[in-house]
Structure formats: structure tokens, C-alpha cells
Image (cartoon, rainbow, N blue to C red; front, side, top):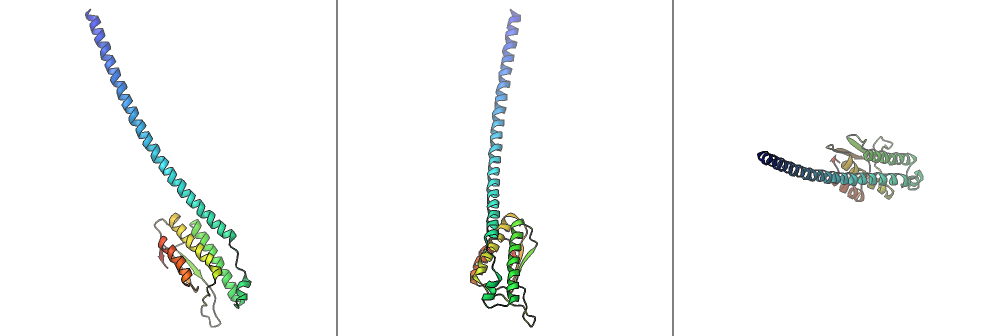
Length: 190
């Protein structure tokens, strides 16, 4: 009888320890599931942020490509019909190409420490000539402004960009477009 009592006590003790181990394991399982769920929520949030960033970046590149391919090139004749010289028309062609290269470099993040929009023409005395503003330039100014913002959001990091505009007339319409972009961009000097 004594052995039976000892045996029963040992079985009860083992049963209690087993139940305690099961409770402990269930508690650990619940804690691990909660931790797992928290990690999954955090990863889903990060994934959503990355998707949103990717979508914005993709849209921005798409917008830039649409602009680059849809923007009609201003023909040389446009400047000649306005009474300008062949040299002026050539310099305007170079200026428009400069806009396109700067915009591409800003969009792709390959721009250096500064960008320079320069009209490069001298008069007979060797003095720099300033371009007249023309409405056909406004899409270029707007896209430059968009590219500055894009560069600041996706490529700048801690860097700031020096923007130089030389010998190009910038009336209020242009300054309005650029000033909004400058406020949203990492531009060191303008």
C-alpha cells in the first residue's frame, strides 16, 4: 500500500510538472506569436512605405520621360521669325539642350555640386548677350523646377545644390515657378 501511495504521489507530481511545462510552453508560444505579429506589422508598414516611394519615383520618372518625349523641340525658325540672328538661334538650341541634360541629370541623380543654365552668346564687342524670355521656354522652366524637387526628394541626401542662371531673362512667371521649387528643394544658392 505504501508503494501504491508513493507511486500515486509520483504520478501526481509528474502530472503537475507536466501541466506546468505545458502552461509555460503555451505562454512562450503566445508571446512568440505576439512578437511575430508585431514584426509582420512592422514589415508590412515598411513594405507599404517602400511601395509608396517606388510608386512616386516611378511616376516621377514616367512624368520626366513623358515630358522628354512629348516636348516639341523649338525649331530654329521660331527664333529667326522673331527677328533674331542665326547665332542667336544656335545659342537658343544649345540652351534648350542644356535644359534637357540638366533635367536628365537631376532625375537620374548624376548631377554634380552645381547646375548652370547659361545662354552663351557674345555680341560684336565680346559682351555676353541675355536671352529674351519667350513663352515656349516655360515648359522647360517648369520641368527644371520639377526635376529640382525630384532630385531633392530622391537623390540629394544631405547635399545641397548650387543653381546658376546666367544671361537668361527670368521674368516673374519664371521666378514664380522656380521659387516654389526652391522652397521644396535642397538648393544652396540661386
